[in-house]
Structures are given as structure tokens and as C-alpha cells.
Image (cartoon, rainbow, N blue to C red; front, side, top):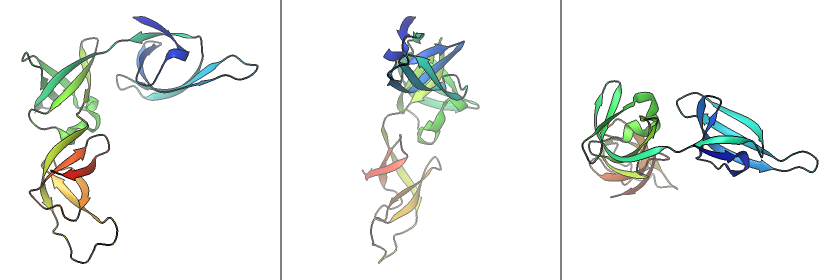
Length: 186
């Protein structure tokens, strides 16, 4: 493990706080005239333990953890686990609660990145956008063209997203996986 002082921590770093590995979501350094320098941190538990906000001295030391990442592709769902496979046909299971917002975008063969902590897969990182086919959307209503008018559209996973009026059932659309928003028709 690498030791880092609070002042060196950035968002995305993983550190041990007590016995819990925590992801730094936000680190804000501040130095006031009389008092010692401090770092305000917003942390989230890596293994599902809730989040917290805390203030640490700028010279306080933390154990920084290096997480392993591996390129994999989605294989199948074996209740309650999602199964992924790497290039050497090794299978990795991820619990449903660790999947976060990724579930509606999963499709056989989808390339993603798994993050491991102590040999256990703890999270999935999707590509920034995916292309999916619209399985159902209402036909556009003529004359309703004032401004940016959107209508709901469903994809095969059941996810419903707002799309522009010109998108029809059967069209392939690109979806931003970070925000869940329509990007463009493909």
C-alpha cells in the first residue's frame, strides 16, 4: 500500500478510513490564517457502506489502495449475480447491488471494465455511450413543433428515455450511459 497525505488526495482515489475502503468523491483543500491547513472530503464506502463528509488535517496520512481493473464483456444474468467474461474466458460474478445504474444498458457481449478489490469484483464501468434499438414509441403528432419537444421511447431492457419527435419504433439510437440521455439517431 502507498501512503498519501490528505493534501495529495484527489477525487477517484481509494483510501482506507479505519477498516473501510472509501472512494474520495471530492477533496477541497483550505488554509486559513491562524489554523492549520485542512482538507474537506466527501467519501463513499467502496463496498456499499454509505457515504460521509469529514475534515482532516492536510498532513494526515492515509493508506491509498490500488484497485485492479480488467476489460470484460457481459455474458448473462444468473439471479442475483451478473456474469462477465474476460479475453481468456475467465468468468467473474458481480452482485446486483454493485451494478448501480448499469443494468438497463447491459446486452450480451457489451464491452465494459470491472473493478476489483481484494480479488472481488465490486463495480462495473460501462462505455460512455451505447447504441440500442427503440422497441416502442408513440408516432409523432403533427403541428407540435414548438421548441425542443420530446416523447418517451422504450428499449429492449424496458428502460424508457425521452427522444425527439422524429425517432420512430425500430430506429437505433445512441444513449449516454452516464446521464441516461438520448444523444443521436444512428
